[in-house]
Length: 596
Image (cartoon, rainbow, N blue to C red; front, side):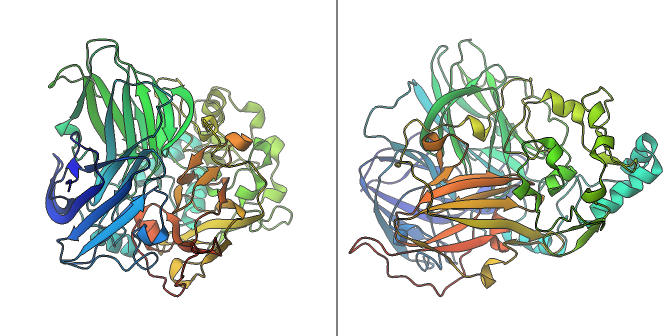
């Protein structure tokens, strides 16, 4: 019997033992009691080979229930590891044995799906070697597993968010910001701006729900400097995994370009970039080729620019490279509220919440997903010709957008927008649209093309619309305005192909994860659309994915932000029917899964 091994010493084996333990997590900034596997704070790496039948014995040494979900793996639903949906979980002191075939290759990960054990450290990596030769060359490889360790426990964080949703927002706008805005834009404009955001119970700085964390790479904080060694001229494969509870990262390696070869475990046509954004729960494999005898910093900034993970690639241990400064935090704009309009061309009208937005009447209102009404957004009377489009791109240097009434919309720096290439997966004018630090190429979903189609291309048999909704004031996240505890399962029929339409009506970005089946992200490439297990949906956008319904059983489908999933942005998917002997004996009554 083989024992699951820790990072850098993984081994191939058909049978693994994993223990779930209380551990001490040392981040360099703080220490805390967390949860780890095999008694270690260093993430465990499981290495499989495509075609293997694996047996994994998981022993729970905690004084509470636990579970392990094999994120991204295609397997029988009873082995998926989600309490309340695929099994009852693992009781304290018990051992549960998972058995399933390995039918894929690539980079994946695993984590607890019980409570907030994953934010408290219960995660590891999975590397699966393919049966056949890889379609790209590399001399050595490293897993680079990112997370956002927080000094507070997951339970405490959730309590604080429920009491005060902006509890962890350390970038709230202040009186000094208001005075600056009044000086720069005029008092009336500053008051209007504050009023508009106040009506929405939001702030332009609501990019991250959770701040105050220390990002880790393979369990090590920035000051601990995880290091991967290389010989100059080697091709190094980096398997990036974002195991964070809540944090998107923008990754770059100053001095090196990254050639993306896999997304979520599936090979893609190589695309070379200077920087990429990795959503929570996604994986990206890249190839880098350092030719100089020097160190390079692996730098991963949080999307809200409140913290960074830092590691090093170097020819020798102990070497370090310059660590970049954090860039200025982004600010959300009205576009992120779904307030962008047809003047911006490619904006999907579905993303604008047309059903709720009154363009035709004289009512100066916008109805929010929770039915509150925002005053002053009368698009029907909005004079687009007077909105300053004619002066867009002129070098005012001010992050503003002039409205027909003379007011100024904060954060609409069209001069900057004109300089940046459009990304169809962000609302035009979005404050979150990524840009490479050095002006180079930033990876877009639109760049991803499958190397080989996984399924025969065919039209979807039906479409299901999922509006991503929430009430920030009460910290309730939902789908179609209904939280998980009140929702009926989504029922699919074995053999159909379903097109999911995500309409993000919130101001947060949501990484949507469907268990058990592949998610084919529509980037407009037909049969070459990339195959993923997580699809990130930015504010004010509509994103489509299709699913070949080929896995009988019941599955979880949820936002992978831990506190969004737990507060309601979660669904059970029931796949009915299937081949004789393979259809599932379904329990459709329970509705109490937790964890991301």
